[in-house]
Structures are given as C-alpha cells and as structure tokens.
Amino acid sequence: MPSCDTLIRNASVLDGTGADPVLLDVALLGDSICEIGPSLEYDAKITVEANGLSLSPGFIDVHTHDDTSVILAPEMLPKLSQGVTTVIVGNCGISASPVHLHGEPPDPMNLLGDATAFRYPTFAAYVAAISDSQPAVNVGALIGHTSLRNNHMDRLDRVATGDEIAAMRTQLQEALDGGALGLSSGLAYLSANAASTEEVLELAQPLAAAGAVYTTHMRTETEAILDAMNEAFKIGRLNHVPVIISHLKCAGIVNWGRSGEVLHALEEARDSQQTGCDCYPYAAGSSTLDLRQVDERVEITITWSTSYPEVAGQSLAQIASAWNLTQLEAARRLQPAGAIYHSISEEDMRRILSHPATMIGSDGLPNDPRPHPRLWGTFPRVLGRYSREEKLFSLPEAIHKMTQMPAQRFGLAGRGIIRKGYFADLVLFDPEKIIDTATYTDPIRPSEGIASVWVNGVLSYTTQGATENRSGRFLARGKTTWIQ
Picture 1 (cartoon, one colour):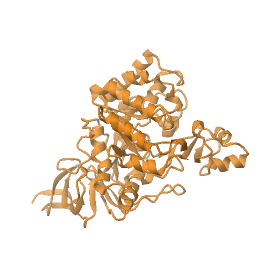
Picture 2 (tube, rainbow, N blue to C red):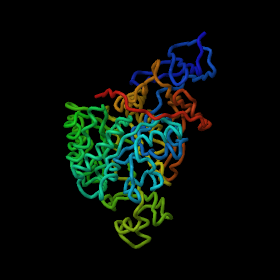
Picture 3 (cartoon, rainbow, N blue to C red):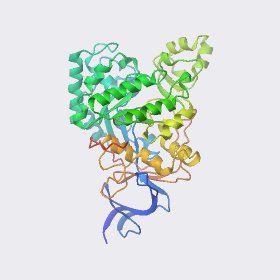
Picture 4 (cartoon, rainbow, N blue to C red):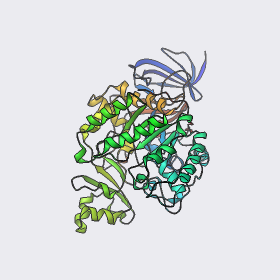
C-alpha cells in the first residue's frame, strides 16, 4: 500500500475549473497532491474525514496590500482564516520593493507602513525577506509604478523625463528577472496622476518579453471612467501585454448605474486583447483620505488620522459638525488619514462581481487600525452571501474566480486547480455555513465555515485557529494562460 502524508476522505471536490463537485478522496505527499480518486487506499500519517464538506484549491487574493505584513506579521491570520493561501502584493502602483525613500513614504505608499517598513532597496532583498520570515501564505509580487517614481524623481507632481523612465525600467527589469509578476499603476493618486500615458507606455515595454501583466488602479473611477479604461487598454494593446483593471467599480453617486456601460467597454476590449478585472464584494471602498473624494452626499468613515487618532471610527460628518467646519475643511485638518467611502452602488458592484472576466480581490489594508471588513471577510462573503444566499453565480463559478482564473492569469504555475502533481494549496469548508462576520463597526472578526486550510501540503488553519505551521513561499512568475 502506498504511503502519503495526508488523506482527505469523502470530500465534495470543486477542482477550480468551474466544473460541478465530485465526491472524491485526495492524497497529499510533501507539498503536492499525489492522487485523486474514489476510495483511495493509502497508508496515511493523517486521515481527515471530510464527510461531504467542500474541498477546493486555496483561494488566491489577487488584490492585496500585504507587502509588509507577510514579513512583519507572517501568521497572516486575516487571510488564512478565510481560506486564502496566496496573496498578490504590489497593487495600485505601490510596492514595498524596490524602494529608496527620501524621507517619509508619499501617499499612498504610507498604506504599507511608515518609513521603517521600507527596507528593501532591491526586489531580491524583498524576496529574501519573504524567505526568512516564512509567511503562512504564498506571495506573488507586482512592482509599483509609484514606488519606481519615488526612487528616481525629485518630485512626483510632474511627468518623468526620459532618463528617469530608463532608470525605472532598469529596476523593473531586474524585478522581472527575479520573478515579479508584472507592473502595477495607481494613476488616480496624486503621486502618479501627473504621469502621462506615454510615461507608463514606455515603462511597461519590458513586460511582454517577460510574459508579465499590467494591472492598474485607473486614472479615475468616476465620470471619466471610460476614458481611463481606454487608457489602460491602450497601454496593454501597444505593448502586447494583458491588462487587469483593479477593483473595477463605478465610484461616486453621479456614476451609479453605469456598470452596464463599463462592462460593455470591457467586453469590447476583450474581443481584441487580453483584459479582465478584479472586484471586492462590498459597496464601499477604503484608502487614504483624499480631499478630491469628499462629497457630503457620501458617508465617509475615518479609519485613522495621524494628527487626531482619537477620531478613528467616527464619520467625517460627525467630526465636521463637532469642529463646526465643512467636511472638506475637517478632512484637510485630519490629513494624513485613512477613510472608508460608501460611494458605490450595490447593484453596480453585483453586476461587475458576477461578470465572467472578474476575479476576486480583497483590497484589504492590514496596517489600518480599523480596517474595512473586506480584509477579513471577502472570500466567505462571496461564497456565502452572493453565491449561496443570493445565487448571483454558482458555487463552482465562484471558486473558479478565486482559483484557476487568477492562477492562470498571473502565471502561478501548478496552483489554482486540484490535480495530481499540483501544489497542495487547499481549503475544506462547509458550503452551507461559510459566511463573513466582519462588519464596518466590528471589522476584525474571522469568518465562519472554514474547516481546514493546507498551504503547500501543510495544515495551517483549522476551526481552532492557526496551527502555527507556516509554509508559504515566494511564487516566481510562470507562464500565463489567459482565460477570456
């Protein structure tokens, strides 16, 4: 009788492809799946009786800001507790490496921590730090356009010169050679908004030869969103590079109801180039406090403020009233600060979330003392609320958005599917009970319904919590296989 480390019996296997579940046994040996089939006979060190619970590939969070958390808080409980086995960092143009600061990190790089958190002048140094910290989840990394601008420009409110772009490209190429997944931009932020389309086009030129991707927090998500989408598509089309639009949404009250237009533009682009998006399952976003987003019709909650830490958790309207100021004046006084913006239509969000081109990304902010609940609840919320309860899409479709689709788009070789020889990143959960419990008022709460999580074959989380067996790895870029 062959031996294995773990035998999971009688699991309802959702293999990640979108296929219907099948009752099977799955055997694990080392970091891999060694066999799948009915009634397997193995001499197993550990046998897990699934009793019909769902077994899927570990969830891949394609949009995170966990760059420094995977090193400074390697237990990664907010992600592990919801079944996430891989995080993709470096989104929205901000990455922890390669970075050379000239003082405090500019907004929004400060979302990743203060100056002491930026310890990685090269991508190789960052990869080494991940190896040393041994996080509980796997890590794939994008390189941030804003981080590169910070390294080579005296100020960020202008277009980069040719020499500065060349210096940025050298660092980007070094990172791509070291396994980075691609380039991200955050053109909506003031630290990158002055960059021209041509600047990003030139910077992105090395991506195609590397088989890498371009992801973007677009120049705007409000009234001019279609223009911003066209800019993103142009950068991908002219460089022959896949484009992923980050946290696609119709932001701002005047923009509500436009998701049909937005998705039509996405579909038209997909006819001629590789493009897709990610989305989080909430009708509110979170970032630094941006004066351009202050709108008295929108509920804005302050999550932190350097100057007034005591107001965290209060609405901007409450603070402004107490100070006898307008909300804009109060926001200016609070800066630098963080905020949750309830500026998205639930109907628009659902339409985008359910689109076949959409992956799931939390966009959680782990350094926020009062984070948006998406940090702890994104994936169980999709499975429990939007799949099981509201039937927005089937359970196999939901799992596909979290597993095979992101693994293939980002080139995460050997992951995202339950298949013999693939890495044993797995989550066992109860499809009838899985649900998020984190709320806007009580955001630091683990989800319910997750039974077990394996990362590279190691049992890392159970209903009792983290096992303290951390086995995550840095994931270098493999070959992308685009799913249109």
